[in-house]
Image 1 (cartoon, helix red, strand yellow):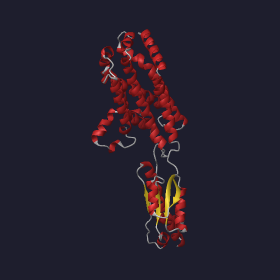
Image 2 (cartoon, rainbow, N blue to C red):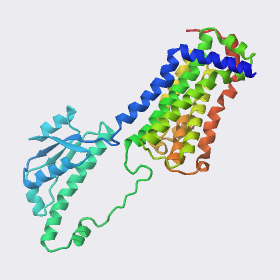
Image 3 (cartoon, rainbow, N blue to C red):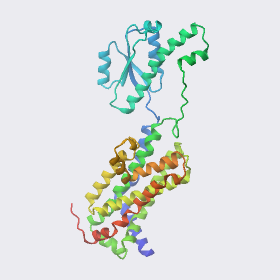
Image 4 (cartoon, one colour):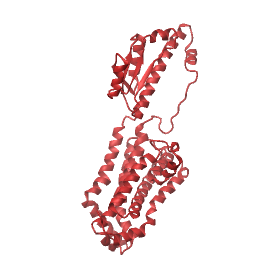
Length: 387
C-alpha cells in the first residue's frame, strides 16, 4: 500500500509540474493576492480625501475653519468654490467627496451667539469615503462654535478647567479592542486573502478530479491504487495539501510577523488555523465534485460558494443584522467559520474552547468527502466526459 501511495504521489507531482494552471492558481495568484491587498491598504485608513470649501463669509474665523479642515489627516481641501452650484457639480464629477458651506454672516452670528447654520455635503456612493469625510466635516463644524465659546469664556475670566467643563461636559474614554488603529488593512485583509485562497483551493480540488475524467485517466489512477478510492484520493491530494500549507503559512508569516498584524492568540493558534483552513477547503472542493461529477458543474458550484462566502462571513455586513434565513444559511460556508475562529482565537486571544463550534464545523467540512466517496468512485469508473 505504501508503494502504491508513493507511485500515485509521484504521478501527481508530475501532473502539477506539467500543467501550468496548478502553478498559477496554487502559487502565483494566491501570493499575488496577498501582495495586492496588503499594499492596497498599506496606510490602514484612506488619507487626504479631496474636499472643498464654499466660504461666502470670507473672514479670518471662517478661513481658520477651512485651514483646520485641511489639517485633518483624512481630508485635504483641494478647491474653494464661489457658489453651492459649482461645489455640487464638482461632487457630481467625482472631483471631491464633500464640501463645507459657510454662509455670509457666519462670523457675526457666532460672535453674537445667534447660532448660525453651517452646512456640509458629502457623497455616500462610497460608504467608506462618505463616512470618513462626514466625520471630518462634522468635527470641524463643532470646532467652530467651540472656538468662539472658548474665547468668550476666557474673556469673562473663566479658568481652563471651567471652560473644558462647559464646552465638553462628558469626556468619552474610547477603547477600540483588537484594532485600536482602525486599520482597514487589519479589518479586510484577514478576511479577503483567506477567502481568495479558499476559493482557489475549492476550484483546484474539483479541477484535479474533473481532469481525470476529462482526459480519460481516471481508471488508470484508480488502478494504481488497486481500486482503493481512499488511497487514490490520499495520494492525489497530499502534494496539493503540502503546497497549500506552504502558501497559507507564508501568508500568515508575512501578515502577522512581517507586517505586525495583531495576533494575541499566539503562533500555535495560527498553525492550527492554517491547517484547518486548507483541509476544510479541500474537503468542500472534493465534496462539490462528488455531488456533481462534472468538471463544469463542480467548478460552478465552487465558484458560487466561494464568491458568496465574502458576503456571508459577516465581515463586510454584520451577520446579526441579516434576516434569520440568511443567518441560518451562513453556517454552510467554510469562510464564516474560519473568520469567526480567527476573530475569537487569534485576534482577541480567547481559548479555542470559546470557538469550539466553528472548529467542529470546519472539521465537518474536512470530512464531507466521506459522504460522496462511493459516488466519486463510480464516476471515475463509468462516467464519460461531456463538454
